[in-house]
Image 1 (cartoon, rainbow, N blue to C red):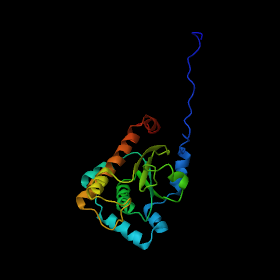
Image 2 (tube, rainbow, N blue to C red; image 1 turned 30 degrees about the horizontal axis):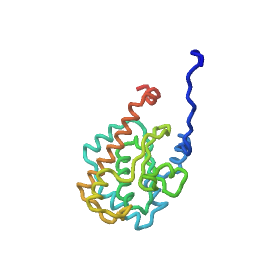
Image 3 (spheres, rainbow, N blue to C red; image 1 turned 90 degrees about the horizontal axis):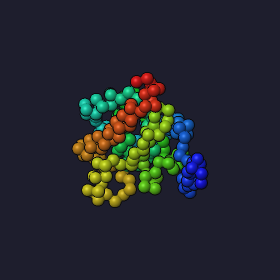
Image 4 (cartoon, helix red, strand yellow; image 1 turned 180 degrees about the vertical axis):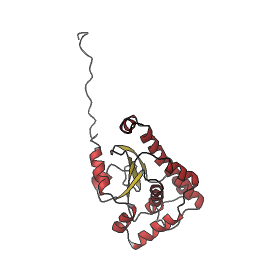
Length: 209
């Protein structure tokens, strides 16, 4: 080989690597997802609604939680893959509603697990279609992170109680201490995404900040 010729290596194609959804696809899915009350009206039975609203009434944000949320400045669309029938969803999704009520920066939507299978396929946990799973997006719908189906605190509680089911019933409400731990876990995820967006060089150029 001549010294003037570039050294190249053959391109390796990984079978099954596929293509993730584009920002346009995520935006379309988000547009088809529903706000909290509209989601429950569309998909929840009377029993489902009672579980979600009971859980919602038990959620309270501390002054520290409020302070974090009030400091958000970037719009962050959050789409939660969920099921009205799911106990884990009934206990956690109302937390997200409280977050979104505390700041206009969180644009929160809920997508039924079976409504758009082509999107749900990209939101699996350990190869399974578990819920809830939240995908956090930039204002122009680039995916940032996904998180679900339970937080670390929730899994610690589950393993301590030797929980055997893949999805709780949502009938038994967690203790106040356990609930506050789960709220803090989720707020850490929301805050991390907000900081990623806030410090993004690309978005700082757009907003000139």
